[in-house]
Image (cartoon, one colour):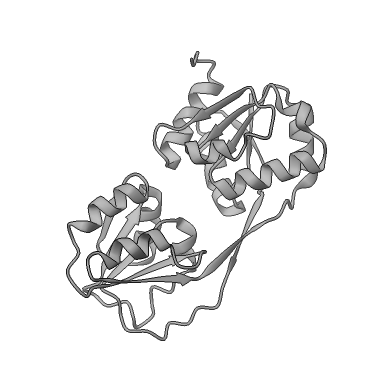
Amino acid sequence: MKILLTRPLEDSILTSKILKQFSIESDISPLIKIKKQQVDYNFSPPDILIFTSKNGVRSFDFGHKIVKDNILVISVGTETKKLIKQRTNLNVINVNGDLSALKIKVAKLLKKKMSIVHPTSSNENTKLKDFFLKFNCKYKALKCYNSVMVNENKDVFKKFLISYEKGIISIYSSLTAKAFVKEVMKYKLQNFCKKKKVVVISEKVKKELNMLPLSRVFIAEKPNERNMVELIKKISGGHKIA
């Protein structure tokens, strides 16, 4: 059984290498492209850096003078933490889970008037901003990259959907799910989706696929690479899943 990897190219290559260790073949057709943005670092050194994605880590300048030795670095996900540790010797506190788990962890560490910087692709996350305001802290979303929907391997994408009737498709983000739906509709491939097994990282991602006639969508136990790979292994190995 073969799997289609739709993550940005760098992440898809890493996932492909992991799956190859378990004799799982994969085709790579990224539906999202990450573009670094020019960043204005003209602000005071923050007390806390929060990374909620590997793309935020890749796009942030850890060598900049705003990064002090005593800065508190928090990551969401073990893969994000590993990438941070490859770039800096700073201590990193990891949170397994989502933004809700992050809030619970961070609440225990906050002090009044702390400043928090969040390298991200988005503008201010109002929920995070409001959360930190409750503690009289300042939140800054540092927009350092853009996520763009683009299918650069159209032939690979179309061939996989048409040729592998019982193939597996992995989708790691809501934006990727939107891009997947867009491409399927564009090339009128809806009927080729019916028998595919789709592995998604969260319930939120699954909802973005509701427009397609998918018969089997599996959600990872936890929203991280390890659990996605475990689920892919389970499905491709022929284990029965309810």
